Image 1 (cartoon, rainbow, N blue to C red):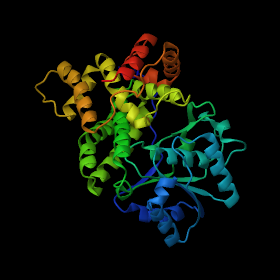
Image 2 (cartoon, helix red, strand yellow):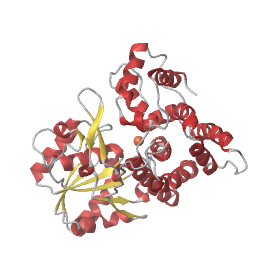
Image 3 (tube, rainbow, N blue to C red):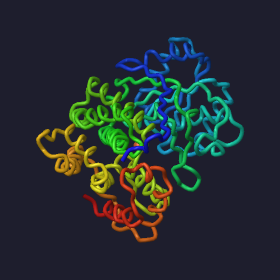
Length: 394
Ligand SMILES: [Fe+2]
């Protein structure tokens, strides 16, 4: 299914990209070019410890740009974390936020650049297009090939109730992203798999989304192909060359889903993550959770977009002679094989999930736009079954 003829569509990609191995050395010069004078450099404690952020510090120092640092962003940051960054920005008079890290760091840093120009706590601008003032200069430097947060107009932030909320709108998109594969090559294997799976899901869900277009397909298909073929290579033998391709592919995948939308893989991920926050269930990382969910959603979706799943199957190596319907069916197993080869988890680490908690997930998913963008409409019973499948595993 595609958008109805005459439906209004919009494509935007406001983030300028500088990419290539060693491009972090450009950071200081780029801040100056864009008019920044006082930087808050944001990261997490792990990256600070392994010396990756030091490369950003070196470039700023070499260019003579003043900076202060905050390397305390946790995984899955909250609005309180954003408020803390805003306080640091105000205390130092920073006019620029440079975020160096994984999706969590980029989300917190980008949110702080928006919240710093607004009164009150950052939770007041949660939601879509709630910010009214121009943000500070925001620059992102991803250290994983995954979320694509460096080009996203959505920053996922957890609210006081454990819900994945966030700040959405073009104000939260970075002005510039620097894609340097040298910063990604030493990522821990488990994290590299989880991040890479997220990027592949961005490409896949954008390609089969109800809002796909030739413009987003042009980004989604090569991104899917690169993630599928190169992620296993990067896990077996991480080189700058292979990460250079993966990093660009993960950015392309986010540009695709940022404009075409996502589907039930992301929808169920957010719903299940909500139960994680109750503290009553063992957790999985965001990317690992995609690995559990993806085969069940793909199997559900095939009948709504068989020709699209057939195209993906060809990219995974199914020969042209195989009829489309058969190729589409094979795509489900090919992705399972791919996930298994990466050592990704196959089931939720739960013994069971009582009906009232299943319904909590289903209600959360049904309230999200991902359920509408998904190529096949789902009933509550369909979603309940998918949750139970995730408990049982594939
Ligand atoms: Fe994602």
